[in-house]
Length: 382
Image 1 (cartoon, rainbow, N blue to C red):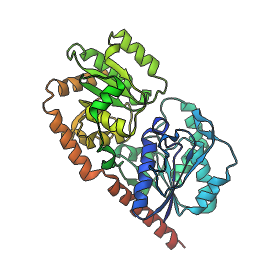
Image 2 (tube, one colour; image 1 turned 90 degrees about the vertical axis):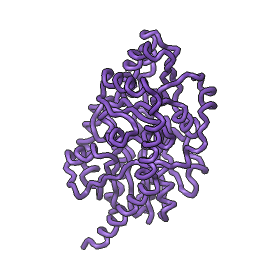
Image 3 (tube, one colour; image 1 turned 180 degrees about the horizontal axis):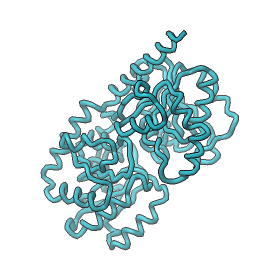
Image 4 (cartoon, helix red, strand yellow; image 1 turned 120 degrees about the vertical axis):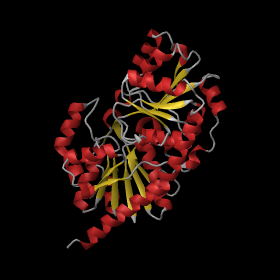
């Protein structure tokens, strides 16, 4: 089976969770016996190394307008790769690359699967452009897919709103590779990023309103007097909020206790999880977050909002689930930090849950089973 994975970027800074998902999915599909290739753009090339993707060819088209992931047309390599593939896996939603791949797949008669990974809902920047995209091509990309993959239960209804029937929606969660977190070095992380010996809570993600870093900073500023030695670390690329967040920290008179360290990956990311008291995901909207799984692999408990599609974190005792507001986050932080003794046990419960249910090996197997069904149905179609 030949599989083409499509995502606008693979870089940790520019692609975030979808870039990591594309990389890991390709690796584990290959280890499951499939041939894999990746189609992406030439931005955020930090993860595109031979060591990261042995035996998996990467075609990176030249991006001419990074803000909107625009590349030069016509691009014959898209057609060549689509014709090579037996099935195509399209990640994300709002990009020219996905639209061009969709058109090529329709012309070539190749089945494709869409995984939006939290990108279905019109939200935040470029809302008008996204609505126009849906009218022109986005709605058809979703409706004509052989299957639509929801990574969390809260995406199923969103696919239904696009007119997708239940029998074409597959729930396949994110995964995690345990080998990527074995070399964590918390002491080296603290030294490298100037955190010192203070306990800290960690935010790892894009500095974007949908991710809620401002909600977390407001909550932290309210509890900083109660937890006088506690620090807050923001790790992730700036998407317009770095300046306002720095201003908020100065206004709260806590700039020395709030650290903005930029994107982290590899050993630095694993070490950040291992060094933190807990990970906080204060998202206003989120499909199932890969960083929850990554924190779990490091035995770090999490505080997440009820907009993350992963409420089972609270049910299995691996953390707390609260509302997406400063008040709720404040209450959650106090509840977890006032008695830090149980945090270690919470982290171990989360780790056990992740190992049993969310390793990439099992996630890739579910994808291979889905692709097999799609190709079998195509062969049997009169």
